[in-house]
View 1: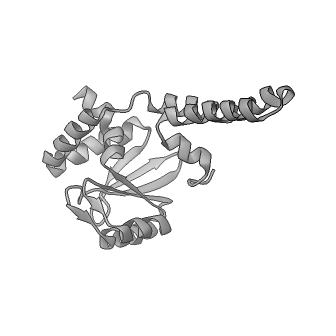
View 2: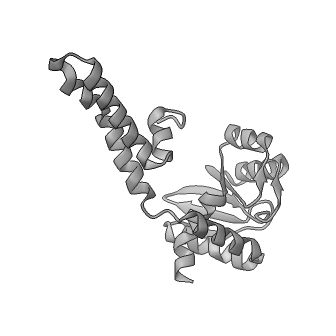
View 3: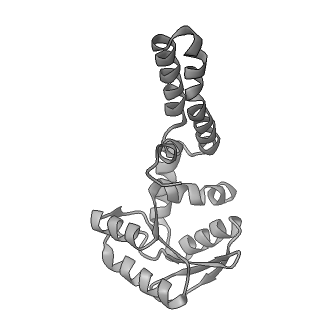
Length: 188
């Protein structure tokens, strides 16, 4: 499914938006369609109901804004050794085998034969530009990894986001980083 499709956007949006769409479709169908077609028209909202249920299920354990802010502050005060250990634990819980690396990439993840390289050492940098991403792509290609991930707490420039999208780099920051490490923080 395309990341820009309506259903993909709704899955990433708050769950209640899909349910509002269901209500709007039902109201419009009930008001505008002839009596014999109202029921069928109202069923047009069913796919949005399913998407709303899926979004609700995915979002059921997301941290609150206060929890997110607290975790981000904690992450910002960590030293590299503790932060890398946290990432190692978080990725291991997701079923990856984790190997520390030296150089532009900090971790190599392997799951079901698929290699992923992770650059996280600059997680405290205030701004993330293109240069660390270029290094990440070069190292990914050198190691013949399928995927690459860059982790940061800082702001990602528009050019860096564009470069990441063009070069198959997954950017993990702020809320995504909190979700990645949430289970690990609960056990600490």
